[in-house]
Image 1 (cartoon, rainbow, N blue to C red):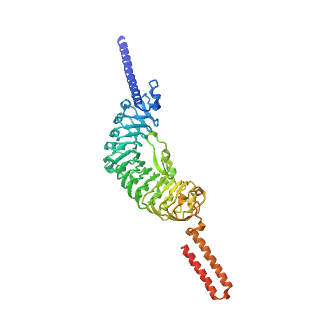
Image 2 (image 1 turned 180 degrees about the vertical axis):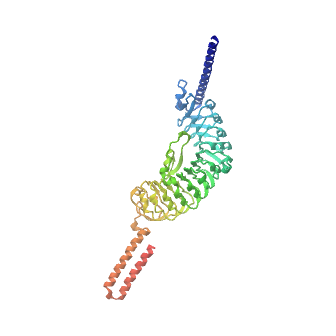
Image 3 (image 1 turned 30 degrees about the horizontal axis):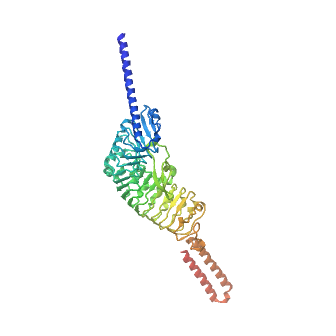
Length: 512
């Protein structure tokens, strides 16, 4: 009986020592994490917002620090705290469980350290809105767990390394508003048919850089992509028709302010989820596709998804658009915004009547093109339209009366066209009192212009009606007078009927 008891005591002791060893290891890691963060805090020029980062306060209670169930740091969330300094003094090896590092909207600078690769559990890296410079470290492409990378609004320069091709596997990638340049790496030129790349991108932001080259062929394999912003770069060539079939889930497509040429592909109308299309300030030619009238999500805005994402910090929407004449940034509310901007191109011919089928759109900007013909008669059917800009084209005819039924319209511009006739009145139009929105249309008259329709040429319909009344009146009077005074001789009668005939001819001439 003695030997089993001793064995039991020995086993218990061994278990105790093992537990102590494990506990000691955990304590060592926690201490290492605290030391790493305190050392980084000490290196910052301004860390006043981290005043409770002290040894007297538990690490998991520090500002911006979140821990997992094991007491290890999982998230470091420090946006907009005015932190100044650099990131290379942070010992990333001491944070093995860190899944989210958010340092956006601070004053951090210097290069992005290559040592960030040691954060093997990192899923979200947000360094946006700082002063980071130099090139993007290629090592970011080798982070196995990375799902979202936000580097926008910094001073990053140089070309994109081919090693960063691995970032196609992340969910959301935003490198916009830096000074990146050159062509995208070779991985972005592999046809999708080769099947040699794996694209999991849901959102891609490249706007506001100096990228050149054609539309990236690699995106043909990104069938989960629903937000693509390539605006304000130097991309050129045609907009590929395969967008309509190979990126079927696109909700937001911005190609504005590039050098794209050729016609707008009809295939874009196959994008049933498309709610925002911005192709402004390119050199696109041809006509506006009639098939745009079938864009499903613009016809039925109630189809737009407002479902909450399962892990909100992994994905988000953000885009800049010209809204009511001013550039504005939209975030989560972008999910409920619909519209088309084709301004500043070389588009010609008529505005398709079919566009009036898009009853859910909130803005339509077709300004600064070479569009002709008249404004679609059913423009008033765009029930939710808040902003309409048709300025600087070659539009003719009268402004359709139906425009007065646009009860949400707060911004209108039809200046610099060839429009004529009386400006429609009533309802929401009465609140648009700036005469400049109708300026440089020599034939327009009425409120809010200081041009009376009584003192100028009226619209053809109105003028015809007025002239028709005149010549009919003259004919009747001439006939009565001729009958009553028949005895004064045939000469008078001939002259009277000649007057009637000439009035009729003159009226018909005006009507035609």
